[in-house]
Figure 1: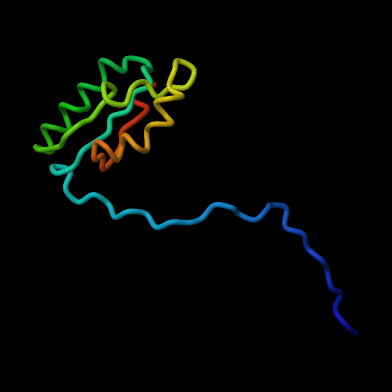
Figure 2: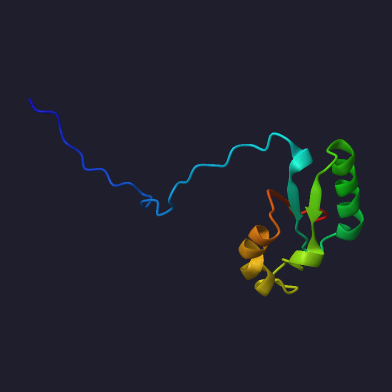
Length: 104
């Protein structure tokens, strides 16, 4: 007797995202530039400088590029033009890593 055959339908569509390799982890934070993005959230102007000073104390030579260069990236309070310009600005300022969402 032949085993029954069943037709199976996968409930999810095929992925359209192209996988890319991740960049290697940063080995020395003393030589990098951090993009410190802001959305003007809760206590952002108080917390952001504390985080930057703590990282500067731990990693002499670390450099920060912040909201003065990137603007407010939060959509409802502006941010549409800033988000559109973000990839180019990250390259322009030589950003190696990003901190965002502090004080939210």
